[in-house]
Image (cartoon, rainbow, N blue to C red):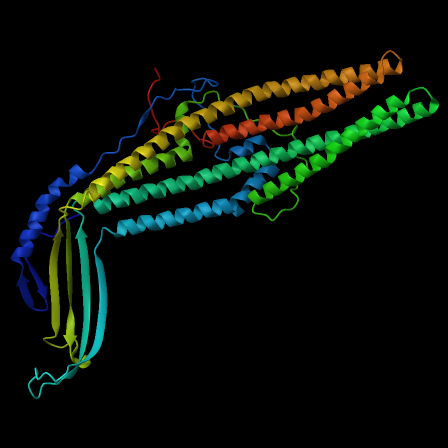
Length: 497
């Protein structure tokens, strides 16, 4: 802020020059006090975090680029359409956008506090005095009108950076809110993808259950024929019927889960329920994105929640300066100029001009330690923000580690489940052959059928977990990145001991 030049002691109101030696001296003294402003400003320094350079599940090579629309790597056009629909209609995202608008308005309000306030006003009044006291000589009117029109200005000099620091805090809060919106967008895409894969997994399980029900229904028909022919006991028939009922019981449960998942996805899409169309989309046709060759821990700097946490720390640091400014005097300039007349027609005539200029200084002397406590409270809030920032980094690193290990172990589990299904399919065929040849009981056939059915359902769950782990990895890394890490990271990394 530039102070008015002390060498210009004259201001003009109309054609009359008026000098203010006292005002000029006060402003000169205030300019001298301005040299102490720098001592109120704390220099923000990003906390240093002892973060490993790479994750335990990834090499230290440069990470390959991943598109911002990372969900398209799964190769499912229906998923792409659902994410786009959610971005356009989700209510959480709409609320996040409104929070950004609010933060932007508050930042503009804080910035406006640095500038003078100019107002215009006018009054019209009619006054009557009493003549009972005899204070007014004869001939003096006891009732008259008064009209006034003025323009006023008020300004508080920001010598100590109070309003500048408030603007800095509001700007940081705006950036944090914008990153919050980005985080909501990232979480929304992740939730839509997760719900979609849940739905595909349940579809697969329902198809397996219905196929198994048909097979077991045919088995019961054959067992009925054998029982009628007297070649098997009633026990074998009852066991076959029991397996059919057991399979039938899984279908309503899966149907209920599918409907509930569709409703969950509909909320994310901004719909009021309804069926989610998914023609041609299956667990088998969905791609599993490749993990980049290297995932340096600096990628965490891109996470919107970490950027937001640091911006909140910057805002808390700026508010310490606001609290410290209360130790120093507030210096304000007020004034008005206008016209006043008892006749509206002469309001702006010659000789009706009025004006006033005032310089006010208010220095706190003693307030029972309130200012000191405000500074201590602001400092404590900054420590809280720093702790939250540090924890957010630690949590983010753990989430990436969890996602990486979930993905690697998920692949191994799904491959093992595939081999298990193949082995159980052979075992079932052999059990049927042995039973038909009379070399084993029907228990062996039922056990093989049951194990194969459970393994097929488990494979669908393992495949779902494998895909969801990839979603969790992209979410933990903050989405996609177009280039290898080049920009200055938002996390200061120190080597671990």
